[in-house]
Image 1 (cartoon, rainbow over the protein chains, first blue to last red):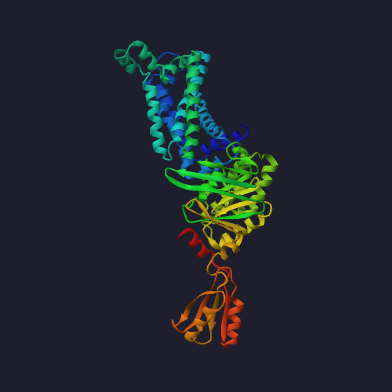
Image 2 (image 1 turned 120 degrees about the vertical axis):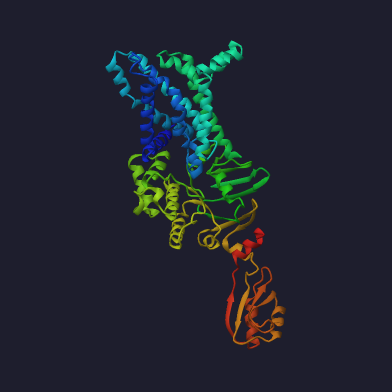
Amino acid sequence: MKHAWPIIKRELMGYFRSPVAYVFIFIFLVSTSGTSWYLGNFYTSNEASLELFFFFHPWLYLFLIPAVGMRLWAEERRTGTMEILLTLPISSVTAVMSKFLAAWLFMGLSLLLTFPMILTANYLGDPDSGVMVTGYIGSFLMAGAYLAITSFTSSLTKNQVISFILSFMVCLILVMLGWGVLTRTLVEIFPVWLADLITQFSFTTHFNGLRRGIIDLRDVVYFASIIVVMLYANVLVLDNSRAK
Amino acid sequence: MIEIRELSKIYGNIRAVDNISFRVEKGEVLGFLGPNGAGKSTTMKIVTCYIPPTSGTVEVGGKDIFTDPVGVREQIGYLPESAPSYPEMTVTEFLSFIAEVRGYTGAERTRRIDQITELTSLRDVQIQIIDTLSKGYRQRVCFAQALIHDPPVLILDEPTDGLDPNQKHEMREVIRRMSKEKTIILSTHILEEMEAVCGRAIIISRGRIVADGTPRQLAAMSKYHNAVTLKLRSAAKPALMKDLEKLKGVAEVAPLAGKKDAPTAFQIFAQKGKVILQEVTSFLEKKKISVEEVYLEHGRVDEVFREVTGG
C-alpha cells in the first residue's frame, strides 16, 4: 500500500485544482444547514441536538455524493489516463481503494466544515457531545457507502451523466426502502418478517440509530459491508472490462 | 529481455493477435509495423499488463505477466497511443506524481524529474497546466512519464505521432541514444522512421507476424532489391531491351521514360538473390552505349510492406 498515498494525494488535490471542490463545499454547507434550519425548523424545535441536521443527510447525499463520485472512473476511462494509472506498478485493488479513500476524505472534510452547527447547538443549549460525535461518524460512514456505490457505477461507463444517474437510482432505492411511508405500505403487502428484512437493507434504517447517538454494531457492519462489496465489484468491473 | 510466447487475443470472433511468438534482447530497438488494426497496440497492451491475453504469455526480465504483473510493470516505461495525462495538473506535478507512485521521494524524485524534463525538452513548459499544451508537448509529457524510473524496457506506441518534423527528429535521437542500455519496442507506420531507428522490424498483419528481420533484410525481400535503373543519353533501340532481358540473372526490364518501344530510361529487375550490376554495365560497355545515370536499388520496404500485408 506504499503506492497508495501518492494516488490519494493526487486525487484529493485534484478536487482543489478545479472549482469543483469550492462549488461542492459551498452547496454542501448551504444544503445541509438550510434543510435543518428551514425544513427541520431547527430553531423552533426547542432541542439542542443535531438530530434534525442529520435527519436530512440520507436525502441530500442522494444528489451530493454521486456528484462527487461520478467522475472517479468515468473520467479516467474517457481521457485514457486509466491506461497510465493501471500500468503503474500497483494492483487494481490499490487503485480503487486510493481513489475511493481520496473522495471519502474529501467528503469528510466537507462534513467537518459544518462545525458551525455544533457551535450553534452549544450556544443555544447544552447538547450531548457524544451524541453529536456519533452522528458525525454515522454520517461519514453512510457517505462512504454512497460513495462506494458511486465509484462502482462510475467504473461501468465513460459517461459521467450515466454514472450519476445509475448511482442516484441505486442509492434512491436504498434510501426509500427505509422511508416511513414506504415501510408502512410494505407491512400491508408483505408478512412482517419480509417487510422487516427489506427495510434492513435501507440506509435510512441503519442511519436512524447513529444519528440519535446509538452505536449499534450491526449498523456499522452494514455500512462497512456495502463499502467492501461495492469496491470489490468495482475492482472486478475494471479487471473484466479490460479482459474482454 | 522480452519473451512473447504463443500470444493470442480474441475479441468476440475477431483474432486481434493470433499466436505470436518472438524475443527481444537488451540493446535491440524493435519496430512494430503493420496496417491499422493489425494488432500492434493490442500486443503492447498485453506486454504492459493492461489487458490480459486470451492465451499464451509474456515474460519481461524473467517475470511473467500472470504471476507477477507488478514486477513486470516496474521494469516497463509505457507510452500509450493516445499519450494520455491528467490535464488539470502541471507538467512537473504530473511527473512528480508518477515518480512517487514509482517509489521515488525527496531529492531523488526532484533529481529524476529535472533530468527527464531536460532530456525531453520540457523545461519551457514545466509549470504549465497540461491542458494548455499543444499535442506535441503532451506527447512528450507522456514520454517523459515513461522514462522517469529509467526502465530497462520501453514500450512506445506510435511515439512520434502528432509531432512536427523537428520534434520527430528529436524524439528519434532520444530513442537512438537510449537504445544501447534498453530494450525498446516501438510501433509505427512511418517506414522511414523504422529504417532510421530500428535495428529490427516485425511486420504484423491480421494479428500474425508476416515478416521479421533487419530493415536491410526486409528491403531485400523487395523485387526492387538489386534492380538497376538506367538513364541513357539517347533513346534505346528496341533490340536493346530484348538483349538486356537475355542477360544472366535478369528477371524483367521495364521502361520508365520515353516512348514505350524506345525508352530513354528503364529499370532492370534481378532474379531473386542475383546481383546483376556487373553484368549490365559490362554489356553496355561492350555495346558502346553511352549512359547518363546508373543507379542500384537496395529494395523498398514500402513495397515489401504492401506485399506482405496484402494492401
